[in-house]
Length: 484
Image (cartoon, rainbow, N blue to C red; front, side, top):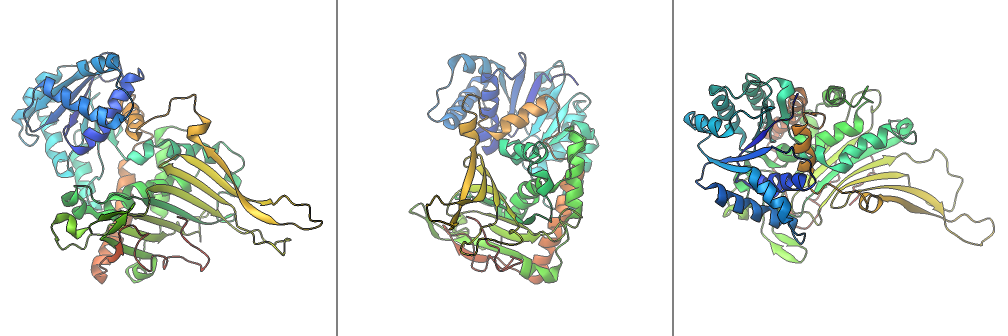
C-alpha cells in the first residue's frame, strides 16, 4: 500500500489533539519522518481560518515542548502542511466540502477519529456518502471502542461496513511506548529470560498504572467510563497479553496480534461470588498530593453523587499451560502518591537456602514505563567483608536506564509519534485488532455486571494514598504485596 498523502483529524481542537497529536506530528516532521507532500487537515465544529488554527497548533506544540525551542525551519514546513475544516460531523452535507478540500491525494487519506465514540458511526457514514472510504484510505480509531462488548461490536460493525479490517487502526497509546515494545525484545531476543518465563519460575506478576492527576476537567467523560473501562479494558490488558503471549512465528502484525488474542481468550472469568475476594473498587476523596490540598472525585463536579470507580485492583488468572496457577495482579488509580507505570515479574524463591543467617529476597524483574523508562533486575549479592566463613547477603539492582543507555540516539518524546508513523507506513502490529478489543470487553463486562448485581459501590480512599483500605485482599498468598 502506498504512503498516504493526507491525514484528516476529526476532533482537531480537542484535548488529545492539542496535547498529543499535533505535537507528535510536529516532531515527526522535525525528524524528517513525514512524506514530503503530506498534508494535515484539522476538522472540528467551531469556525476558524487556516492562519488562526495554525497559530493554535503552534501554541499547543510550544506548550508540549516546554523549554525546548521550536525550530523555525521545521515550523514553517509543518505549518504549510496544515489546513482547517469547520463542519458538523453529524451532517452529511459537510462531507462534500471536506472532500473538495482533501482532493485526491496520491496514496489516499488517513482519517483519525479523535472524538467521542458515539460520533464514529455518523463520521464513517458521512465519509462513505461521498465515496471516501474505499482503498487505499485508512481510518484510526481512538480508544475507548464503546463501553461494553455489545457497543464495541456495534461500532466495529459500522466501521467494518466501509473499511476492511486491514485498513482499521485501533489505538492503544501504551503500545507506542518504547518500553512496552521492548517487552518483545526482552522476552524473545534473550536466552536468559524465555526459559524462565512460565509458572515453574514465576510466582506472580504485577501491573500497576498510578496517576497523581484527578479527572483533570474530563468529569463527564470519566464518570461514564471509570477506571475499569478507561484503563483496565485496554491499557492493562494489553500489557498483560504482551507479557503472557506465546512466541509469535514472526514480527508481522497478524502473528503478534493472534498470540495476544489467545491470552485474552484464556483469561479466567471472575464469577460474581468471587468479586469481593478478587477485586477492589475505590473512589478518591479529598486529600493531599505533593503537599497541595485536592478535592475528592465528586467535588470535581459540584458534589454530584457518583458510584464511578477511580481505582481498581484485581487478581486475574490465565488458564493455559504456561501460566496455570500464576496470579496476575492489576492495579490502576487516580490521585495516587506518585505517577508510575510498571510491571513486576516476581520469581520464585530458591528451593533450598544454604545461607542460614541471611534473608533471601526472590529475584524481581521490574519494567518501568513511566515516568522514566528502565529495566531493573534484583539479585542477591554477597556483602564485601573479611569475616572468615561468613556470607552476609543483600539484594542489589542491575539497572538499565534507556535514557542513559541511548544518549546518542534520539528518543521518541510521545508514544503517539510511533503510532502515527506506523499508521502512515501501514504497519498495524502496534494496533488492536477487532477480536482483541471484543475479547477484552467480554472479560471486563462480566466484572462490571457482577459489581452491579452485588451492588459493590467504591470504597473511599484519601487522595495521596495507595488506594482504599483492604486493597491487598486480592493477594493469593500472605507474602504477596504491592511494590510501590
